[in-house]
Image 1 (cartoon, rainbow, N blue to C red):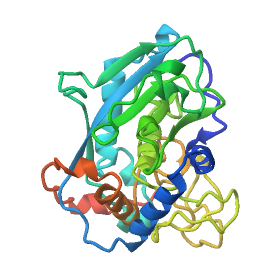
Image 2 (cartoon, rainbow, N blue to C red):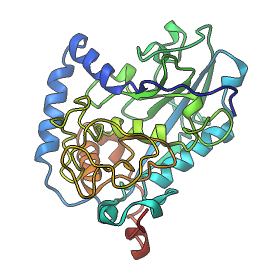
Image 3 (tube, helix red, strand yellow):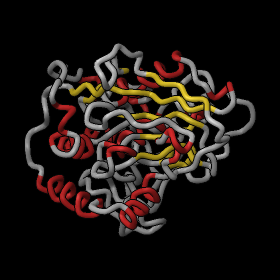
Length: 319
């Protein structure tokens, strides 16, 4: 474990990066509008096959302790494969009123075995940097600025692991942005379940949250601060007044959403890793639309048909 407390004040930098790209990147606003139009129009049955996404993990480190081990990387891949397949730890804590919403995203992740030029690879790159700490400014995504260049974004999920400052756990790029910066960045102290992973973000759920953004999910409260007018564009997530943090107790009511209150156990909220345990049916449908649209290149080699969920898996007990 890392020494010292993990002070988190910003948690996720995805929306600030999104607004920055809207201001500075030509074509991004139009691309995002088209993607959302397609997502709103999506009315197809759920995808039956499992999509396997090849991942390249770019470890960018300044201090030797930040050069996370292969064990730590594989612990993160294990969490992704459990959580996106509705098999993750803590599903039995979902309150009974929300149990019918729990859904299998039918997405799995594997470290890439073949590199961009067809060469064998471990799916892991390692870069020693002179940069002591990075921010949500994409410098970690370029060799020229002390990071590592992305692999082709239509073939790999680029996942950068590095020291992040400013109280930041991670950030992602929504679909529609430039390929050279496409992917997810995670603080090494919020990555995986062993090594430098630090409580209360040592359950691997930061990467689950950020990859949710990469698959076009919004924050569950709709990013309107503490108000009640925001929208995550998913019909089965209750309206809530801002992010939840720590370990809320059911029911946590806001925005007139009584009696059941906030879906604070959702991966797209800000609750501690031990509390964040589920995606909803509506969120998995939105991910389906993303994988059929802007992330469609990953459908070229789908996996096996999804295994049917066991009845017990669909009915978690009340917290």
